Length: 113
Length: 115
Image (cartoon, rainbow over all chains, first blue to last red; front, side, top):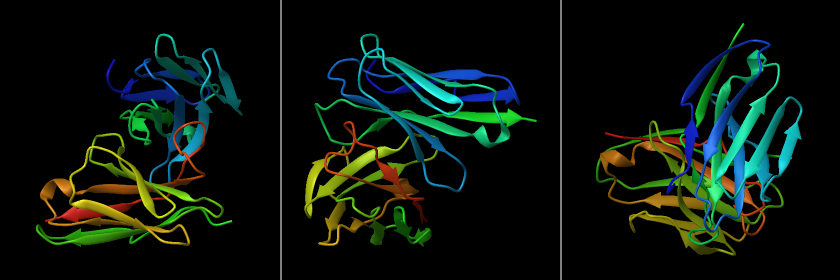
């Protein structure tokens, strides 16, 4: 994998259901994986920064896991609520090139009441 | 505590013109990064400023330049605008290093339209 890829591109979930989506990133020269939540007309909000293989982080109903050996991260949302509707971006930092983050295109999540 | 602020919110320019976008970092942050988000794409790294110098640069032409002031605020300048420069420009601040283990805090962006 040369770029950061996210799937699915968009997702419709019923309120109360749980959901998850994937971020794939280059595993070589990996240093950190960032997750952001971006609501329309607002600033991207940082959710997690993960660096260690096997790391799991949790914030309320949202959690994330990291596999640096195979180059993927999962974001889980338990008991989806309408306020969870947003675009979820992941970004990797490889450390071998520019100091900036390399972003995926995002997963657009819509929670249906 | 004010977060990252950007100005202006929206901007319309014509091809060939020059534009300056501004960013004030979160209080206590000394590093500013700029990103371009074209329609349907993820944000793409332009460059990062620390101690008033450009530390790293992404794959953008020299038409894109920047500046950081002693108060850590920053400007992004784009010369000879092209239609393809139409995008949302995001500014992010952090403590030294940014993208490694440090969280980057984003502003709401400036929407640039080039006609």
